[in-house]
Length: 217
Image 1 (cartoon, rainbow, N blue to C red):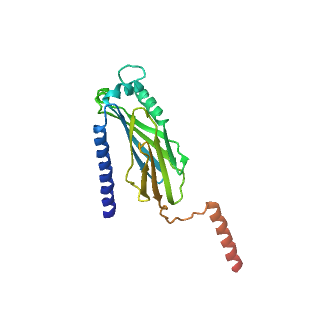
Image 2: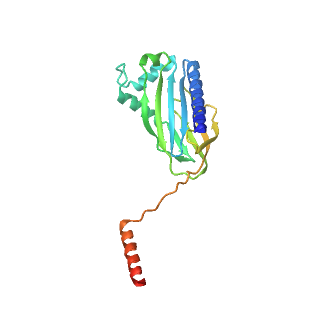
Image 3: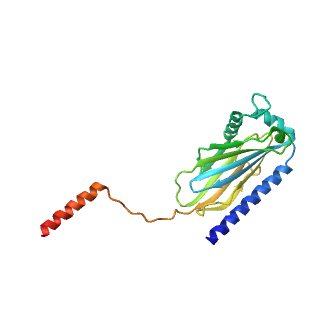
């Protein structure tokens, strides 16, 4: 229990440090950039991505126009999801060079005033189910190609929550649009199980035993 609590504190600390670093990068990015910070969590059966999109003041109106398609000055839920789906189509997520089906879990759009001030981050929460993988070494590849004309990128793997996952390395291209996460997956713990026979089989076995006892008598 003590080890579990200690590990939870370490994971929380690493995650908090990464969030702080991302926040500092967001506050320091230039007025004409669209900062896109991806945080990737790897579990034994799933990959989750949190993507924060923060527009600089000079490009904020262009980003708002991409989201507010009817020009009403407010963002509806449908407009937010349509924009998130368009962002999703510019991304690629793979395990061991096999494409994964990525789903949009949630999208949050801040007040337009916050976006115009270069402070509000649009957040996408994405997820993909992993196929059954053997224990051993594996790779996750994430590529973000959204708005490469104004985009600047960050990508990091979060500290794993599952004890079955161990991150070995993170390799990025120069622009950090692409990240490859090398990790090791350990086998699932084996648990003892009892095999229950169907009722019909139990009846047959009981009759056979009764017949054997009569023959012996």
